[in-house]
Image (cartoon, rainbow, N blue to C red; front, side, top):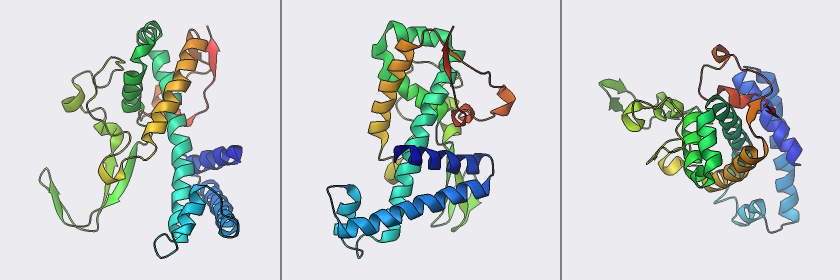
Amino acid sequence: DRKIFDTWTERIVAGAVQNENNTGLDAIAELTNYFTEMIEWRKKNPEDDLISQLLEMGEEKVSIMWILGLAFTMITGGNDTTTGLLGGSAVLLTDNQEQRKLLLKDLQLLPGAIEELLRMTSPVQCLSRVLVKDFELHGEKLTSGSRVLLGYASANRDEREFGENSEQLNVQRKINRMLSFGSGAHFCLGASIARLQSSIALKEILTNFLPVALAIDFPKEVFPTPGGPTKQRLSLIHI
């Protein structure tokens, strides 16, 4: 079923990025139906898996809608973000050959480089939140119930935090904090596995595609956001 999950994720993301509502909504409906049937099956045939354990807690504590929401988040968030990080990393390392050479020379830099690539690509560009009380920021009054947009990609390139070269890739940069995985109660549950998966995959890309190049060029004006190329299929070739 992994291929189905990937297909749903791609269609949902395409619907959001390219404003193709029908494509995204159809995929969401298919994903929801899939997990609705799985939940009903697990009610009668529980096993040692997350959905069975959640069902065992009872609907008083965990509703069916909550389980469906979690499944949606795990499938779409878990697939698209790591894929986006790797795709964006391929673009960045292609455009910054000196940084790629530093990594190849010393793979011990890879854990720190992953943090820098997470900062630069920001696979989740932004998310909205609803204010639960009145708030004032930089002299602007925001009322309870208002929606605010959290620009993770913008914050991750804030020169006040990362210096005057915040727009440049530096695999040796020491990062104390960044917002690619969110913050506080909303911090990404899959952060550790995302870092592990990305480290393994990026090491293989670096050591098996030497030197790295992209099969197609990306016009810069087509991708105005840091994570733009992460939404396109990439092919790596030898040069």
